[in-house]
Length: 159
Ligand code: NI
Image (cartoon, rainbow, N blue to C red; front, side, top):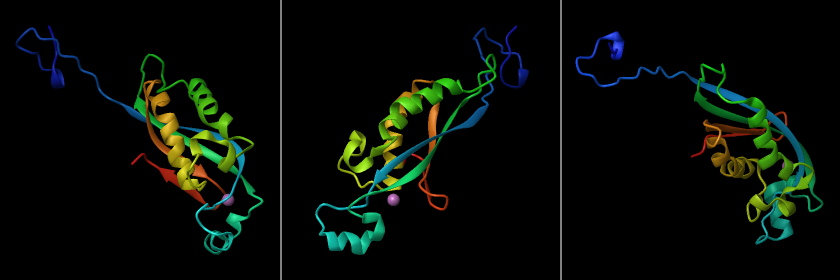
Protein backbone atom coordinates (compact mmCIF):
# COMPACT_ATOMS: atom_id res chain seq x y z
CA UNK A 1 0.00 0.00 0.00
CA UNK A 2 1.30 3.44 -0.92
CA UNK A 3 -0.01 6.77 0.22
CA UNK A 4 -0.26 10.00 -1.70
CA UNK A 5 -1.41 13.46 -0.80
CA UNK A 6 -3.63 13.55 2.28
CA UNK A 7 -3.06 9.84 2.81
CA UNK A 8 -5.18 8.68 -0.12
CA UNK A 9 -4.15 5.40 -1.50
CA UNK A 10 -2.75 5.68 -4.99
CA UNK A 11 -4.23 3.40 -7.58
CA UNK A 12 -1.09 2.67 -9.52
CA UNK A 13 2.18 1.42 -8.16
CA UNK A 14 4.10 4.68 -8.46
CA UNK A 15 6.12 5.71 -5.47
CA UNK A 16 4.81 8.88 -3.95
CA UNK A 17 6.96 10.33 -1.25
CA UNK A 18 5.32 12.65 1.24
CA UNK A 19 7.88 15.10 2.44
CA UNK A 20 6.53 18.04 4.37
CA UNK A 21 8.90 21.00 4.16
CA UNK A 22 9.75 22.83 7.31
CA UNK A 23 11.85 25.84 6.45
CA UNK A 24 13.80 27.41 9.24
CA UNK A 25 15.78 30.65 9.22
CA UNK A 26 18.89 30.61 11.30
CA UNK A 27 21.29 33.44 12.11
CA UNK A 28 24.91 33.38 13.12
CA UNK A 29 26.55 36.49 14.58
CA UNK A 30 30.23 37.26 14.12
CA UNK A 31 32.23 40.39 14.84
CA UNK A 32 35.23 42.13 13.35
CA UNK A 33 36.87 45.50 13.57
CA UNK A 34 38.36 47.28 10.64
CA UNK A 35 39.47 50.65 9.34
CA UNK A 36 38.09 52.42 6.31
CA UNK A 37 37.38 55.70 4.66
CA UNK A 38 34.70 56.81 2.24
CA UNK A 39 36.61 58.19 -0.69
CA UNK A 40 36.53 58.49 -4.45
CA UNK A 41 39.91 58.63 -6.14
CA UNK A 42 38.52 60.62 -9.04
CA UNK A 43 37.42 63.42 -6.71
CA UNK A 44 39.58 66.02 -5.00
CA UNK A 45 40.17 65.86 -1.25
CA UNK A 46 37.88 68.86 -0.90
CA UNK A 47 35.03 67.25 -2.76
CA UNK A 48 35.44 64.01 -0.81
CA UNK A 49 35.32 65.95 2.47
CA UNK A 50 32.31 67.92 1.24
CA UNK A 51 30.33 64.83 0.32
CA UNK A 52 31.46 62.25 2.89
CA UNK A 53 32.42 64.55 5.78
CA UNK A 54 34.49 63.01 8.57
CA UNK A 55 33.91 59.55 7.06
CA UNK A 56 36.44 60.67 4.47
CA UNK A 57 39.21 61.46 6.97
CA UNK A 58 42.44 60.76 5.03
CA UNK A 59 43.94 59.16 8.16
CA UNK A 60 41.19 56.56 8.31
CA UNK A 61 38.84 55.62 11.14
CA UNK A 62 37.55 52.32 12.47
CA UNK A 63 34.38 50.52 13.41
CA UNK A 64 33.46 47.49 15.47
CA UNK A 65 31.31 45.76 12.90
CA UNK A 66 28.73 43.14 13.79
CA UNK A 67 27.82 40.71 11.04
CA UNK A 68 24.65 38.62 11.08
CA UNK A 69 24.45 35.87 8.49
CA UNK A 70 20.97 34.39 8.10
CA UNK A 71 20.57 31.13 6.24
CA UNK A 72 17.41 29.25 5.41
CA UNK A 73 16.97 25.57 4.95
CA UNK A 74 14.92 22.55 5.50
CA UNK A 75 14.75 21.04 8.95
CA UNK A 76 16.83 17.87 9.18
CA UNK A 77 14.56 15.74 11.36
CA UNK A 78 17.20 13.16 12.15
CA UNK A 79 19.57 15.85 13.45
CA UNK A 80 17.08 18.32 14.88
CA UNK A 81 18.66 21.26 13.13
CA UNK A 82 19.02 23.01 9.79
CA UNK A 83 22.77 23.34 9.66
CA UNK A 84 25.63 22.61 12.01
CA UNK A 85 26.29 25.98 13.66
CA UNK A 86 29.87 25.05 14.40
CA UNK A 87 30.52 24.46 10.70
CA UNK A 88 28.58 27.58 9.67
CA UNK A 89 30.62 29.67 12.12
CA UNK A 90 33.87 28.20 10.76
CA UNK A 91 32.91 29.03 7.17
CA UNK A 92 31.99 32.63 8.03
CA UNK A 93 35.19 33.14 10.00
CA UNK A 94 37.43 31.57 7.37
CA UNK A 95 35.84 33.20 4.30
CA UNK A 96 34.97 36.60 5.77
CA UNK A 97 36.08 37.47 9.28
CA UNK A 98 39.73 36.41 8.93
CA UNK A 99 39.99 38.56 5.80
CA UNK A 100 38.44 41.68 7.36
CA UNK A 101 39.37 41.64 11.03
CA UNK A 102 41.98 44.25 12.01
CA UNK A 103 42.38 45.20 8.36
CA UNK A 104 42.12 48.39 6.38
CA UNK A 105 39.15 47.66 4.12
CA UNK A 106 40.24 50.13 1.42
CA UNK A 107 43.80 48.82 1.19
CA UNK A 108 44.01 45.23 2.38
CA UNK A 109 40.81 43.36 1.58
CA UNK A 110 40.99 41.75 -1.85
CA UNK A 111 37.24 41.34 -2.31
CA UNK A 112 36.73 45.06 -1.64
CA UNK A 113 39.27 46.20 -4.25
CA UNK A 114 37.83 48.98 -6.39
CA UNK A 115 34.65 49.29 -4.34
CA UNK A 116 33.55 52.03 -2.00
CA UNK A 117 34.17 50.83 1.58
CA UNK A 118 30.61 51.65 2.66
CA UNK A 119 28.52 49.32 4.79
CA UNK A 120 26.29 48.69 1.76
CA UNK A 121 29.17 47.59 -0.45
CA UNK A 122 30.76 45.49 2.30
CA UNK A 123 27.44 43.69 2.89
CA UNK A 124 26.99 42.99 -0.84
CA UNK A 125 30.58 41.78 -1.17
CA UNK A 126 30.17 39.48 1.84
CA UNK A 127 27.11 37.96 0.18
CA UNK A 128 29.06 37.31 -3.00
CA UNK A 129 31.95 35.74 -1.12
CA UNK A 130 29.77 33.52 1.06
CA UNK A 131 27.00 32.43 -1.30
CA UNK A 132 28.54 29.27 -2.78
CA UNK A 133 30.08 28.18 0.52
CA UNK A 134 26.71 28.42 2.23
CA UNK A 135 25.07 26.40 -0.56
CA UNK A 136 27.70 23.72 0.00
CA UNK A 137 26.28 23.31 3.52
CA UNK A 138 22.89 22.42 2.04
CA UNK A 139 21.28 25.70 3.08
CA UNK A 140 20.71 29.01 1.29
CA UNK A 141 21.89 32.46 2.16
CA UNK A 142 18.90 34.61 3.11
CA UNK A 143 20.20 37.85 4.56
CA UNK A 144 23.41 39.67 5.36
CA UNK A 145 22.96 42.21 8.11
CA UNK A 146 25.96 44.38 8.82
CA UNK A 147 25.99 46.80 11.72
CA UNK A 148 28.54 49.56 11.46
CA UNK A 149 27.44 51.40 14.60
CA UNK A 150 24.67 50.93 17.13
CA UNK A 151 22.50 53.21 15.04
CA UNK A 152 23.44 52.30 11.48
CA UNK A 153 23.12 48.96 9.79
CA UNK A 154 22.45 47.51 6.36
CA UNK A 155 20.44 44.47 5.35
CA UNK A 156 21.00 42.79 2.01
CA UNK A 157 18.89 39.97 0.60
CA UNK A 158 20.94 39.22 -2.49
CA UNK A 159 19.15 41.17 -5.18
NI1 NI B 1 32.99 54.80 8.86
